[in-house]
Image (tube, rainbow, N blue to C red; front, side, top):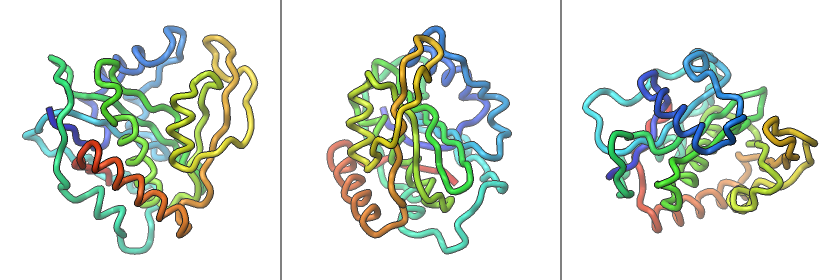
Length: 217
């Protein structure tokens, strides 16, 4: 099936809750996604499979800080129809994964990235991370930050690939087992060096997995 990205919609919530429960501990405090749809400081993006007859571009949140310049190459990338790639089919579930981002001042803070277990290993998590960073650029965030479990080396390697480095530790951060979290952050994402790095990573991802349609604004 085909994979594309867009903003979270109300009809996606049940599937996103399933993915969250599957990806995280049973003791994980569930996100109130219905309430979060109206959170002017947050953005939720979903990777979905297959075509949709209805309009898929959710209206922009006008309260988020918009980049005052014309949308650049990253905006063009996210809005253009760039083709779609195939992933294994799974009945009755078209949402493949999601990413949530909170905007706090000049910081875009990724709070969750999750992909359905049968669909992992198909580049969807990396696609969600790319899209979160691209949207952060469009909304004029200066840095992208997140927390990750100290035991999750796979995720840490992905984040390091995209220029996030360790900045500290939050002791006992995860409520399910009191595991520590590493604090990770990019440098300035609008810098020339980071722009070139991201360009290279986006090209590499598209060459391996194919480009996906992304409607994020």
